[in-house]
Length: 354
Image (cartoon, one colour):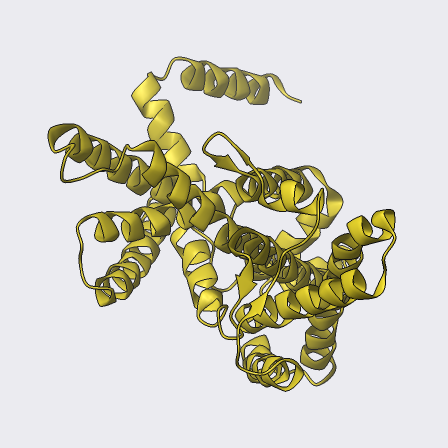
């Protein structure tokens, strides 16, 4: 390294060290994919908290009961959105995760109920829901692999493959169980592990947090995470450095299917029953949460924190509208507007960075 290069590096380090805190915050917002959503989320929380303090009787945003209900509602969609986000970073989509959510939850409940009815031993009965859950998580991952193989083998857009998959698994749900609701009352300790509470913190939120932490380390501190970004960002460049795009995308599809199955089981455990069409529409909400969270539509950019904040902001809007007793269709209007605003804001931030 020449003396001029060393002097340039020292000046750059000194300049960065001497920057004020607001300037460092501005750099973080501009440099990070979740920068825009972090600003929007903080502004939304400040406005909601201010409204709750000014009008505590009419706007009960800060009540523990409201916080508990909101957290419970966030977790299933957030768990699904983590899988969808990994797949989007790899440059693909899965529109079937909502249908998988319902189908695999019903399979889990049916298998668990059958095992509980057929096996009388206490230890076997306690293991029944765990066996059923292991089965559906495996099926969810295999469904993802199935979608990936069709997409890659025939070189068709994953949007089309999984749109067909959505209709397929929706029909499979009705064929397998019918249109009636199914009760799911698992035995202990399954009920506590996946449906218990610690104060206002539900078990599903703990699972959501654990998966978010695990996927954070996967994306940012593991070679596979680098492969997801590389394949989604520039497939040809990824091939040039020895990455197998097909293998990487198959893994991403499998993760999305696995997370859809896990989300369905966790939600069924909390509610105690499953509606055959209960997951339809969740796939679009999951994609919306990811887009709002700063994930690029063409892949290669995004973060776990952005997915978490995007999901939280979607449910913050829903909670505010419920507290204000607004009509239900307002939710779709606000989320749709928020998607466009988030994309425009993230694009503007990336252009200012360039």
